[in-house]
Amino acid sequence: MSKSLLIDHTPFQSAKLTLVEGKDTKAGLVTLVGKLQEAEQKNGNGRVYPREILEREVQKYAEGPIKTRTSLGELDHPEASVVNLANTSHVITEVWWKGNDLMGKLQLLPTPSGNIAKALVMSGIPLGISSRGMGSVRQLGETVEVQDDFELLCWDLVSVPSTPQAYMQLAESKQFGSTKDYSKINELITEIICSQTGVCPLC
Picture 1: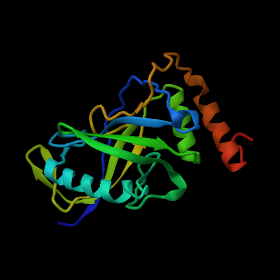
Picture 2: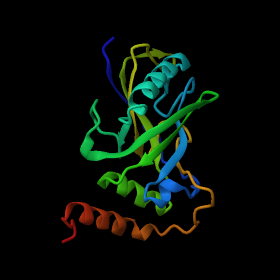
Picture 3: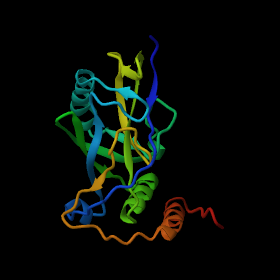
Picture 4: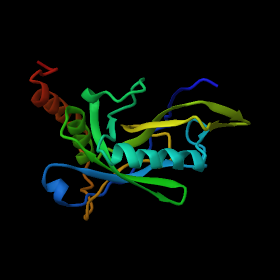
């Protein structure tokens, strides 16, 4: 079987966010925690990742990219098998298992994409997270099983995650405000783009 880029999406769902104060937050960095992926469970695209395969790839990822702090991800899934540094938004800092749920912690970077993600999160907009990898699949009835040649590339921030309930939450100690002024989202993003690039898309 030939390998292909495996990217998954599911319908958008709302999620409750919490805000936790910490050294990273005070330094202007935001840390998110949540479920990265789930083994042995059919996702929105009908794919199942066997625990043994996902566990192997996660271990390699923890001992490689996470350990060397090269565990970067992008804002939205690109159609590529490499991480585009110009669009990086976060770095994965920790992963652990909770049953068949793969949990993780990531830190938003002070990059243009990272700042957009931060503005969305601070405005109460839920962000999802979804894996990107290379591999082949096999049809098993109504289920598509990811095969042993799967290679994990990264996790990207998305609006529509493929893993059920894979929405990231702010790692903070108190409840984030419930007010959500969606009308200011475009204004926030435009302001970030202007400050980062010096070019205003509205001018």
